[in-house]
Image 1 (cartoon, rainbow, N blue to C red):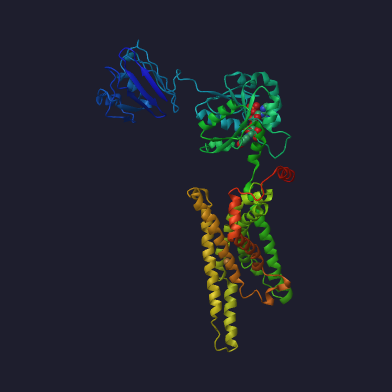
Image 2 (tube, helix red, strand yellow; image 1 turned 30 degrees about the horizontal axis):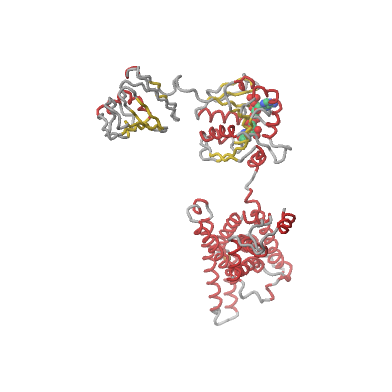
Length: 578
Ligand SMILES: NC(=O)C1=CN([C@@H]2O[C@H](COP(=O)(O)OP(=O)(O)OC[C@H]3O[C@@H](n4cnc5c(N)ncnc54)[C@H](OP(=O)(O)O)[C@@H]3O)[C@@H](O)[C@H]2O)C=CC1
Ligand SMILES: [Cu+2]
């Protein structure tokens, strides 16, 4: 806050500014001789130093305009230096409201000082809350702590239970008649009807509707719209409904985002100012017609995770039963062997990498589908179908779930060879071979060694890149990257990860593809099935990268259109698309 004070007699002019924590003053050089003496040596006094220290270091201001900054505790110390001037400074706790008044009639000794919180400070704004329930109480407490005065409107003002200290309680009508402009409606929607009878008291007030419902579409209209219909002469603002009584009570508000909507700009502004004071970050969602959307927010449960989780659960279940039949049940039926112990470890370590690889490729599939769609349409100015849009929006979550499954696969792989069943099989094989009196029981197969080493190498590299992708998808990491860096990692490295992980799968089956015993009951093994989607994605991606295709696509993405839209076309598109 800038201020300027002029003293007519001597022509002294002081200019300065007040901020939240400091007062900064300087004498304007052009002024004539002046008694104003501020310390040029201590331009910033921020401690609770006694006035004498200032006094001692006091020296006349040089004409070039030295300055002094004072903590707001120290406003009073300025007084002695502003001789023959009266300065009334009123500070109101943290939010410094400063009123500077200059009166030539008053001597410095009679300077008026108002310490913090006395009656002369401007009264804190009064806010009204209807309803003394959980939310009403927590909100009131938070508002009181933020320096507001609070009055409650209640059905039973004399028996409504404990309320935050310092708040008043009265009947709804009496509370509405107070000076508060903002009234928070902390009442369930079912009980709104009585408010209609109070319409005359609520005229011109800003009613903040915080209510939520238990389910979506419980009522034909949004709660806030209903409230506005009951009270057409009040301005209803919907908002803050994503807060909980618990968060309010525990002060977990700093930086939290809240949404507002309403038809009255001033109403919204008042609520936004109050919310900012509580430490909230406000996002204006527009007119009251957005109330429905706002009321649905608290009912959402990880919306962007829903599709990826469904895909993950679906794939896991499918492959689990598929492999159960192919491995365990097949062995039991055809060979009479019970290998059901494999369900826990061996089967898991087949299902997890399969689901992981398919989900990773599902992250990149919508991108190539979109590219082909743009190529086919010859324009980028037509909307993608909804399913593709939704799919594109949850790629990050798909990728993170894929990473989770890759983690499980890595851990399982570590343990798998230490198992009893594996050791037993290995030793029995050795003993068998010895019994058969073979001279070289350990035939070294060079190709096998190469195959396995490459398999592990690709697995480790793929997993490393996987983790890298996962890390950059974290907002704190991704936010520190430029768009090009982010794009490089998510697209180039992402596809590289897909290539490496797919090769990992191919190498696993390299010598089994043509073996008839691989196809038990005429079904391909799981790892073969899981290679289908990634292979398709990689082939499509390779097609997109062909120079001729890539050139056309780049042009389309820069706004070029194959057919210039003429009027007929536009009409046709409108018919088909909308
Ligand atoms: N609790 C929470 O965390 C959150 C709640 N909300 C919303 O805030 C609103 C209030 O919730 P909450 O405080 O938890 O509910 P409570 O049931 O704890 O409190 C509701 C209050 O409404 C008043 N009331 C009850 N019946 C009537 C009636 N027939 N006529 C007039 N007033 C009545 C009562 O106050 P009195 O006795 O003083 O009249 C009562 O204390 C709801 O719409 C809820 O959806 C929104 C976000 C979070
Ligand atoms: Cu693997």
